[in-house]
Length: 500
Image 1 (cartoon, rainbow, N blue to C red):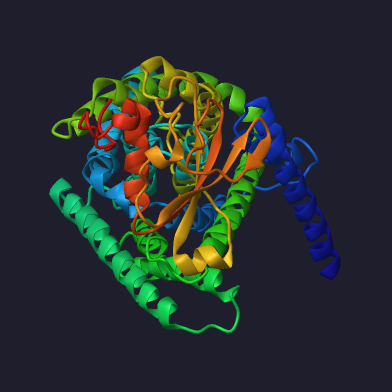
Image 2: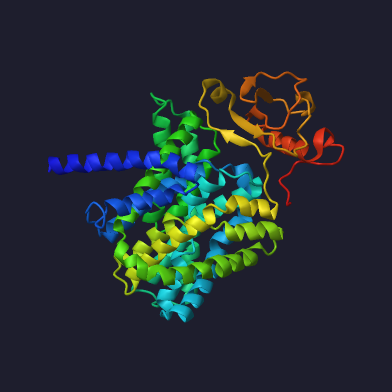
């Protein structure tokens, strides 16, 4: 028994280290890292090194555990000031958008692939959820308007819950035992109660961690992540949506200025990477490469229906009444990334031994690989083509230092791109609010402490320390100057993240 454990630890550690190194390689090659992890799983599987693994039920359970951690990290790193303006459109995309996507994909695959209605709608349900890990990892490398990024991140954090509930409903033998309106009420109850429980656990955790004098700073990250898992457990025990509870609890805790906040975010980030690596390798291990060729045609049909019909229709329907510009709607349609979540959802009917579930899993696996290659690498060019890039936006640097912790301040980075009206502006002309200061300028590879008369140049990298109280004001002021120059206030430019 011990010998088997030792061998498992050896293989697991080797795979983990290779996966960590693959992140660097995939970044240089421009490939999404999830594809590298899936390839690792396939390589060590039955068709590679000969490790046989076909336990769909175990994969489903471990997949849910990984999703809890990934969604928790997304919630902890989401800023409420960015989420609040987009909560309506994001919630609509995560609910109404999911239903519209299921209906459109279901109709297409029913008529083009000849599947029965239940299996066709199951295809739509499995593919309806955008992947939080893929969205969080990809969008944070792009300079886009904060409102657009927040919409996509909030949608991906919230739409797992209704997607899971609908996939479970379509996969179980009890389907059709109740009228449709009953199922709608149950869905609404689970989402609503999950939201309330997540908020309650988050507020309780906020109150406790602010007052607890834990003997070690390393205990605070463990407690914060543990609270998000507690929210999931409490919700599922009460037959509510655990995933929405995790996300809401994470958002509440992440915006509470807890002790050792940067350590909490760093710990959650590391756990999320570990969860992603383990999840993707496991899913690759579960796949059978010999069957994937037969799934190529269904994957292309379902993928094209999703990308060019279901997703755009759901975005247009959900954007009604929210005044989202057409160019941003086009990007929302293209940026609905699929990753591990659809593959995990495909293990639900597989574990229920539903007829056609094996082909569904293979189809979703192939679809995710193909469309991750197509979509993830094109988000930047598509954003530039649509004219919605925002190269002068601030980004947060996660640096854990005691002075910043005591000040309740963040370290922000600003790059000065060509064409920005920030070029030529003196630092004292930025008129940053009290509580914010430019601490360092990096120019041509050399860093220096600037003075009030320092003039910004193209290519400068500017570090700004801003307290939590004035951070949003700092972002608006720098955005305003980047648009209209030093006289932005005279032109009535407020710097709001308005529609472009």
